[in-house]
Length: 261
Image (cartoon, rainbow, N blue to C red; front, top):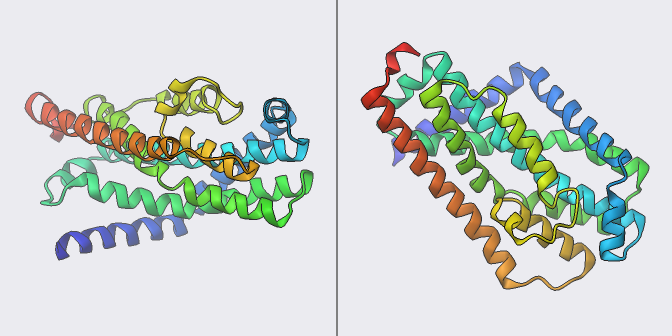
């Protein structure tokens, strides 16, 4: 156990140093996510929330921002997990990792946590823009902080989803633009930009969390089933992802050629 903890510690340290060295990537994420939110704001999607919840325009904008925070965190997690596996398979590092006595899934998960915590700085641009055009009060600030905190369990489910795409990387070496397509679809088919009435949307890791925070903001009752769904769905996605990933590893070891990466 001590050796496993040390392995995780050094992976985290190396990742942190890499982020400090290549800050342009983090800056670009800030620009992209902030720019996307600005476009969404001027599309007027908050009007749907104003009508559905019978609330003010300012509250509608906060409801949109809550959803966007969850989506951004989920999107970053999905992109990091898949991107890391794809990059390491392409550069021959992944095969070396497999020779370790420690499970690669655990190390990847803790690296993902560090990455997403560092990516919290990308919320700065979004929150500053929303503060200028919408205006905040103490309640709004506390709700946005709560949204960031409650979105963290989403990393479990999105990690599982990332491992599913990572499984494709193991066998096919790359997923191309597939992850970007999925990230975009998740923005529009979930309750991120609209108060969805479709129960199937709750099968996606972060959607229940969005509704929980929105209900807190609106002072509505939060059902135990909604909270339970949030955690259960994320755990199920993680289990499915790990199973797919391990199956892909076994398949590639048997029929593939790791030494040709």
